[in-house]
Length: 157
Image (cartoon, rainbow, N blue to C red; front, side):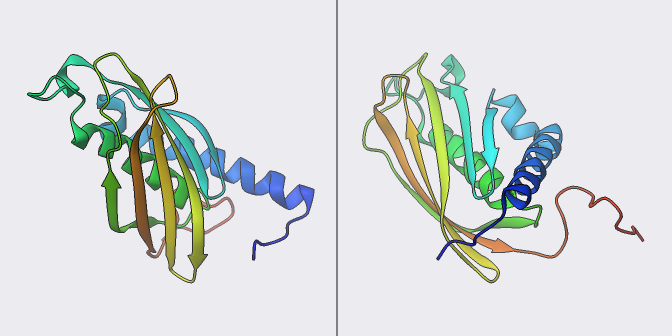
């Protein structure tokens, strides 16, 4: 059952998610190097994009599955950290229903499926610009101690 929040609480959670997204992206050299852009973030949700470049195409002249995985895994990371709780992958899997191609604009949309205690499950769908599904990713998260970005008013030792 989803938690119920007032409009003010929801707005505060959204502002926090956006601040976390900005803070993570500033330090996310992998995403930056691969041209992955954060399009949208909300509690338990993210949407990110990446264009398949020449250096992302494999020996079969299609998008390397590892690059599709990287985009999906990045969307997963942003969605599960949006509450400002340090969270990492505990496991994940991906299926490639169709190949990505050179020049495709891929979009990964991640949604929280289940979260309880320190664990969560997230699904990511990666599509090309024409809506073709090129990746179906499921990630299991594990929450660690700490915050992703500094919490205003908290003391730092």
